[in-house]
Image (cartoon, rainbow, N blue to C red; front, side, top):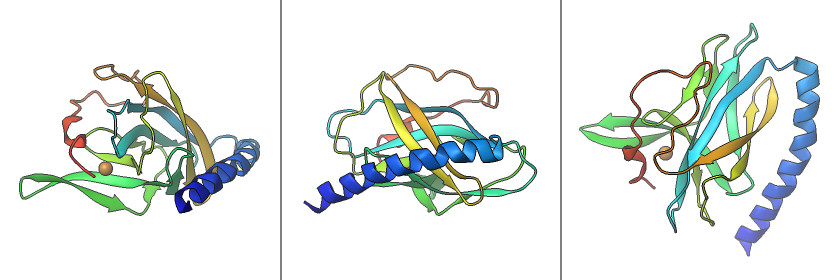
Length: 173
Ligand SMILES: [Cu+2]
């Protein structure tokens, strides 16, 4: 029951935030943009999934990414994937600074957005709504593209051309 109430609140919240986000777009002329949000489809009964994207600050002042929410889970946060004593572990990040003209990448094998407590399977082709909250800029709403296993994300202007590791993601949570 508690879960149902939280989910309901999350949905109401995302609705009211949508109108706020639109106002922000006008006020700030999109000083911060989100490029190429994507995630993998999940296997049945998966409890967690990672979302990848790039945050670009086109402005002249530092901002900070504070939180992330989605109507499909009651719990979402930022993680960093690091190797400790030869074992890959997830570290919680409570916020991420977004420096002007230094794109912040959330990508496989590095920092990522973690959706936890999944109650549904996420299918390739779906678009998952996600709200990113910044200290100064406020909220940005994005639609996360769900890719099938093996499908490569499209290149965004700030994407790095390096080797991606996704395998580390199947084992945590
Ligand atoms: Cu994680």
